Amino acid sequence: MASKLKLNVGWHDRLIRIVIGLAIIAGIWIWFANERWLALIGIIPILTAIGGWCPVYEVLGMTTDTTVTRES
View 1 (cartoon, rainbow, N blue to C red):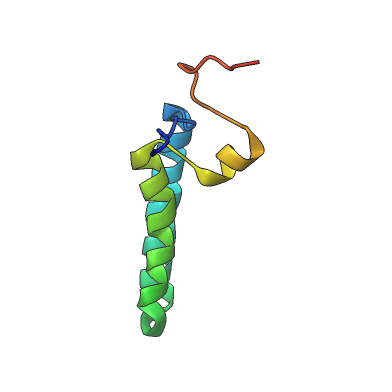
View 2: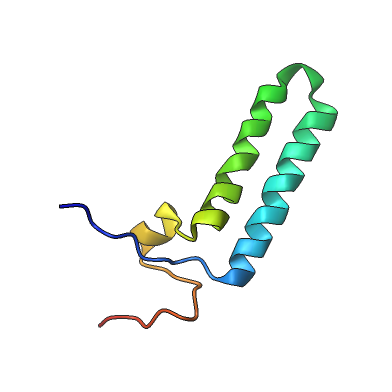
């Protein structure tokens, strides 16, 4: 049975992740012309922002989503 992923990334965190992801993509695209495929690294924070779930937060038991109530 598949487990449902709980959102653990709040909207402030999502906005920051999108900005950081776009900055990584732009920076690599501009300064490393021969290694532009490295810009794919910037997709990771963008995807976690869109999905609202971060596997690192899940492992650490963290959440920045204020709509979630913590279970004891």
